Length: 466
Image 1 (spheres, rainbow, N blue to C red):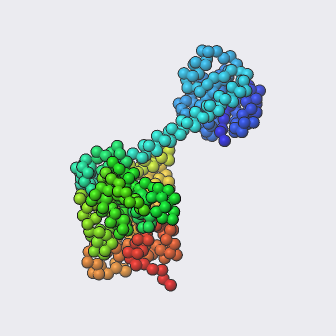
Image 2: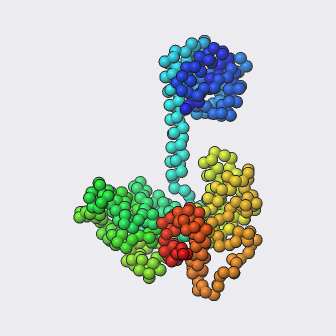
């Protein structure tokens, strides 16, 4: 329901306008002077203002000018019993939507009100769309550490080519962003970038998703479907979490890479496709090959260029820059003043383990913005950060203590990866038991996809205790 404010020093006019507008189901407030009207605009917020021109203390033109400075998108309809063409022109120049004379014609009044509200809605929608377009633009790869410098340099060299790229790194480290920049800086930038999360699609549907299907090819195939490879024709396809792709889908992807042809599920016709393939995984594909879960020939087809995105814990020097960027972005989205992050807070953030990488850092900054006051301090970080996935005890995180030795036989781990796998297994097991083996709740708790959590459960052979 639209909210309308009437500013007029004649009670009879205010009552008449209120009666007409409330009959049309508008919510209406009225006031007899401009000063109070401006205060009401500030405190309440309106969709439209009807304002008299000739008033005591502050005339309508002054109200209009003052309101335009703080509420530039708020439509004004000026009303006057001494209407002239000159007055109407002046009101329009100052930003009024329209001008009507007293006594107002009922039909003209309602049409003008409706048009002004429609215009206000369009202005708001346009702003929202512009914000969405702005957000949809590829973010910068922030960081000045040697690891990030190497990634940026590789992107600059590789992007203009059609070479296939395998992007490796932990969850939340920024693999998708690397893929987006490879596309943005390529000769295919004006063509589509089609993203496929292989871990989020059930194995029985992955082939249909990638290559499409013909009508009637299986029970639920009620019409023909165009697959992601066809949608990406002329552009780029990004296969995220390719290590979770089913063996049969791997075979078809390999054929598409070898021959630049695909066949829809249930179809016989070969379809030519011209796509650049980018792939990403958080798995060690060589280990997956040894375990028989991934094709060696597909690995070599994909791994023409390898870009490894280091975890945040290995580039702590980038944390202040990332934190400041996230803080500015989130505060802007919330339409609040940008909060300052103190130097001590930055140092405290750098001391955290960040198992969730960039994604976790952004979530923590958002939490700190919401829960802290005008600035984000060291105490705020200690109180509210609590990064998920930490193998440290919370009470020890900020005391510069090492990983507690209790429960770990370090001699049992031949390398760092084995130790990380063990710590990850213990953490997931703890969270599952804490949530009574509710997988959906646990996935939300530790901020990973449910399908990925199922993969981890299978990988570590975790089972619910009887």
